[in-house]
Length: 66
Image 1 (cartoon, rainbow, N blue to C red):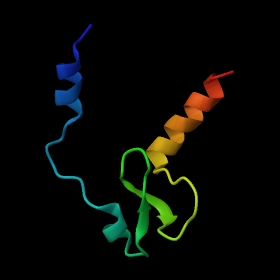
Image 2 (cartoon, rainbow, N blue to C red):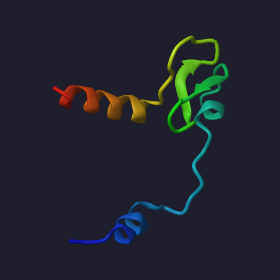
Image 3 (cartoon, rainbow, N blue to C red):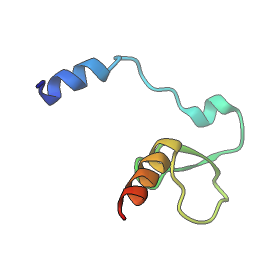
C-alpha cells in the first residue's frame, strides 16, 4: 500500500490551473461554495452553487446515504 505523498506526487502536474471562467468567455461565473472554483452558473444564480466536481461528489454522498 502506498502512502499519501506518492499519490500527491503522481497527481500533481506542476502546471498552474487556468481560470475556467475567463477561458469560457461567458458571463462572470459564481464560485463553488465548497472549493471556490468557478461553476457553470452565472453570478446572478440564487441558491447553492457547486462546481461540476463537487456536484458529482455530493451526488455520490447522497446516493449512498440510504
